[in-house]
Amino acid sequence: MTRPEPAGRRQRLLRRGAELAALLVVAAVAIAVAIKTTPMQTVNVAGQVINVGTTAPSWSLSGPGEVDLFGQSLPTTLQFPGPLRPRLALSQITINSELTNFVRGASPAGAERALGSQLADGWTHYFAWQTTIAGLGALVLLGAVAGWRRLPRRTTIKLLVAGLVVTEAINVGAIIVTASRAPGLLRQVSSLNQLVGSEPPPQVRARGRPLPGVQAVVMGDSTAAGAGLAVAAGSSRLSRVCGRSSDSYAQDLAAVNGWQVLNLACNSATIAHGLLGPQDRHGKIIPPQLASAQRARNASVIIVNIGANDLGWSAMVRYCAVARRCDDKATTAYFQQQLASFSKDYLQLLSQLATLPGHPRVIINQYYDPFGPQQSCLGPAGLTPAKLATLTSRLTTLNAVLAKGATDFGFLSPQPDFTGHQLCTSQPYVQWFDDPAPFHPTALGQLAIALTDQAVLRE
Image 1 (cartoon, helix red, strand yellow):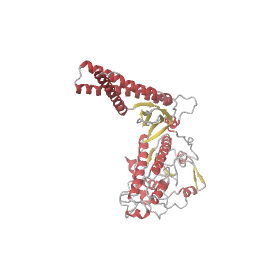
Image 2 (cartoon, rainbow, N blue to C red):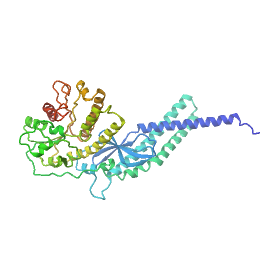
Image 3 (cartoon, rainbow, N blue to C red):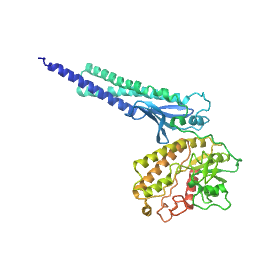
Image 4 (spheres, rainbow, N blue to C red):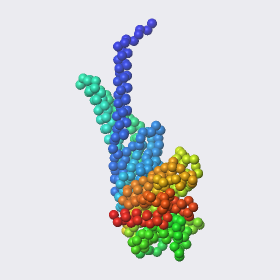
């Protein structure tokens, strides 16, 4: 027969096990709090400011980090091991001679990777702070427990030392195993484009003869072109193909200010195919709008309307009109994917607008709300209040990206206010379904946009 284990020994083992479990719980809480509260570290590269921190813990063994660009979290092209991966937030843009290289990368093949080195240093500094905060957190928690249980001083010191050792062992061990490779990966980064996986378009160059008399340039999509409105007699074939109207807000601004305004906007234009790259419109190849804008070297104002075509806004409205609902997982995921792609293209556009000769004032127009609170007339078209709430939410998200990007680059970003003049009102500023360009501004809507831009220019 085996002798039963003495009760005192069992109790000691149980007590030791409970103490170890308590230390592990304290360590887990302290590490989690440290990850949550450790401030992101600021690094400066070429006059630009980036904050470096960590993503929320993940259960996967590896995955991408995050880049916060204009309020959108974009995955990095780099894959990092472990549950904690770098999170990078672009917090301040300075328009200087190094901005283009910061976004696009330096052209020489052997250029020093200053961006990657700074990001790696920021990541290392972040974890130095995180380790310190985790240790302090463990000491505070264990000190509170010791005070609550009125432990003797000697026992308290042993508890604090044991807790600190366990916490830092787990924390540092996890960092060594999962995060130590991140600095080496970050040092490979030479540009913001490389980090988010964006292929920069070719550098836009001026094409055509100079236009020294132009005071303002309007670029963008069908909203800026004046889709569905009258085209001026004697307009060029290019203007007719692009749908540029004599009632566009470009012409309103010209009339109010006595300016010569160059309207380069074109129906269906996107950033990649229209503003920074050529656009195929009914078989006619239209030069990049930005290249044409560079001919107006004396222009003091550049106004841009862009984003709706990049996100497929018209198709989204049509789908919502016929579908049972348009906030399902598939369409929401598609919208997020399109928004992430737009954010990358928007970065390219903003960086090139920032380096225009003469540094004109830049206005990035947000989109007006075409629906408003009066929605009864939209029901027969299949647009229920729930569907309109989804569309309005997505339009608001697009406007937030437009505004954040403009603000980061020091540009203006007003939103025209169509309150009281949306679709179901007695005097709408928006074209109806059976008009030539549904949901686009009427002539009065174009005037409202012009007045909005005029107001911010006077501030």
